[in-house]
Image 1 (cartoon, rainbow, N blue to C red):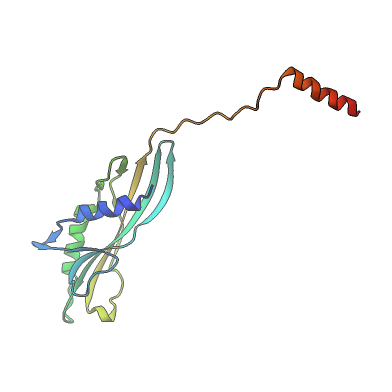
Image 2: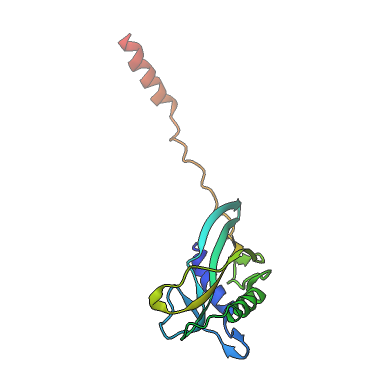
Length: 172
């Protein structure tokens, strides 16, 4: 029962077809190719079990989503990254991700937003908007399997008990 195996595909499905100003925006997980200039980077989700109740497991899930724009020159502008971040929030904030049968996702919410990490010199000038979004994911478990009653010890016959009593009485 791995919520990560359900959350990542649900995020990709929610972001499929994402476009800004008519330009398709690719979505990558962990690493983007060097030639990408306008893209979304999904960080590894952090998942914490929240317990649940009988028949239902619950996890709190947090995902870092970065809107990244790279520039070929030193002319930087935050406007494209802000526009991409806005498009991401329209797709993810307040939205319950589609999950497979037996799983449910509550509407997500934006936890924090910032300007993201400083650019790595080798990657060229870039602007990043980092969004941290949170969801609760539920798994509805099948009915509990029947609990087997403990096996009772074999019944002792009266003849056996009399023999044991006689043996111990003879010792004292």
